Length: 340
Image (cartoon, rainbow, N blue to C red):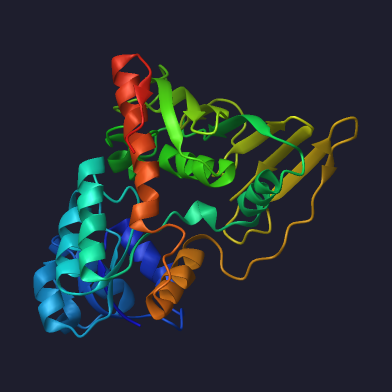
């Protein structure tokens, strides 16, 4: 599949270096970044021919025979790049959050439907064995009805790091840039959308972030399940894996899991305790394609078969809606309904 990649900053180059190079089903035939320094850095690192590099999406689409567009740009570039790609008849795989508002997200979903093209969001934390197994246990009814879920995420970025200056300046660095992963996993594991959320965000005194780097929230799901969430970029306590530490309470037992402590899936862990019994580890199935590679594999499959991916734009609107509801709830200090 011939792909144009849009966005060659640090994260975009990481995508190309670690996920695209060597992936046999995808060949990048064009590169786009409005920042000449980013294009030059990519050319220097990967030996790209200047003829396949462009400073805008439209010229790349016009000059290049391609099937799809991979958008790894920062959030302000997501909607314009995706809209141009869909209008040109290309399929789109893009980073999260895929739009700066629910309304703009729905506009892109509508554009993809009219164009008859796949619009997929790389919610890469879904492509790991522990959350997949947890969802299967929830939907099987093995432990009875699920009632409460507790999620904890902690990273201890407490020492100043000059290389993280851009990250320190992000608006809503926890809720918008990180917690969307956890909010999306809530919807996946619980197998329900969120109904409303209450959230308090804050910045510990030792934080180097400009905006709030920590938050606590309560989420009510449409099936009645209540989820508590605690997250921090600057915790002084031991760090969790990237997907966090999860505890699910059922009417006949409980389940714990942690995920994405590495990018292979082999570090994922899941434990189960049935009522009256002892907690025991559950052997997790191996996965050939995890993380962003899992997103790529599903995207290629969707394009080839026409099947909607699990993280299609339409399916992902609920995750964006929950994220922006959390930000609003934190700002207004009240319960906020999640858009549907």
